[in-house]
Length: 113
Image 1 (cartoon, rainbow, N blue to C red):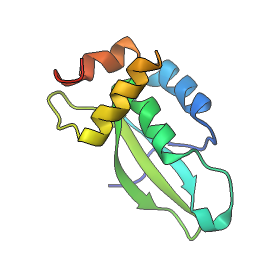
Image 2: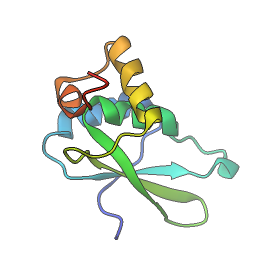
Image 3: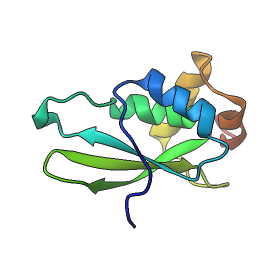
Image 4: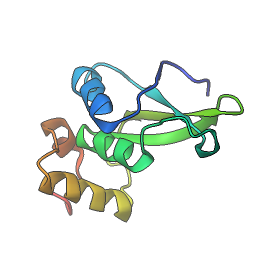
């Protein structure tokens, strides 16, 4: 799979803004992250996944771009897809914090709702 449309952001609020504007119309986005050794700013992985879950999206593939960067693919979660316990816990956390959108709630497994 080739890297498609990319987005370079450094914080969860910017990713959340992108998701608010695009979660219902885009099929994927590749977040660009810098390798830690570069010391260049990148969005935190866990924060990116938490925000994605809030809108019914999930990470599913990582590809290297060059010596400094890689891209992490996010896309809408497929119906009846498997949820890891870690992501269920993340979803519960987002619900408790009031961050879960209606689109995200619609994708939750029965044991999280």
